[in-house]
Image (cartoon, rainbow, N blue to C red):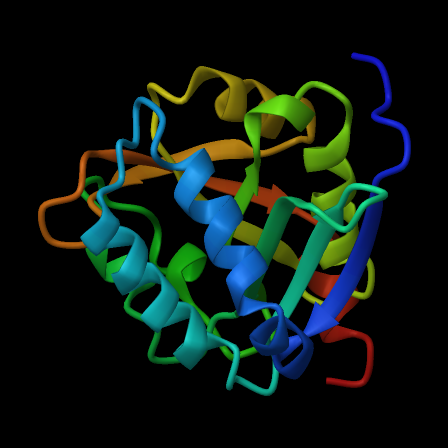
Length: 194
């Protein structure tokens, strides 16, 4: 993998991401139109609506990669999971109860990470991932990934994610792997004044 020159990666809060919503939608629409995702125009619109709601969360974090001419090339975003998150309720395989426990600061839910095809294999996804987690205080990161998305799966494994289960993240969704990346030991977070 050779680094992609002249790509800037900007960390954003919810307000900044909302102002760049068109860029996030463009990247999402193009990246997820490809197999195995094959997102339709209606699914892209639905995601854009969810994104608008998600950016209103005070804890929302994002990163946007742009080429030197300003063209959006990649996105990453998510937020910490609250105590009543439904994320764990979609599991197809059981996990220990202590793995499911959320308090609003334990787990960062990585909702999307995508790079447009011409800019892949140059480290952009890794830079986006690092940028969205740069100030993370959470103990771990959680994401859902399709098992047939081979490049994404390889990247996640190389970054240290491990599979903890399987889920249908929404009604009608294909089965996804539930992956977790440990950022710090649980006791380190608990001992930091919490």
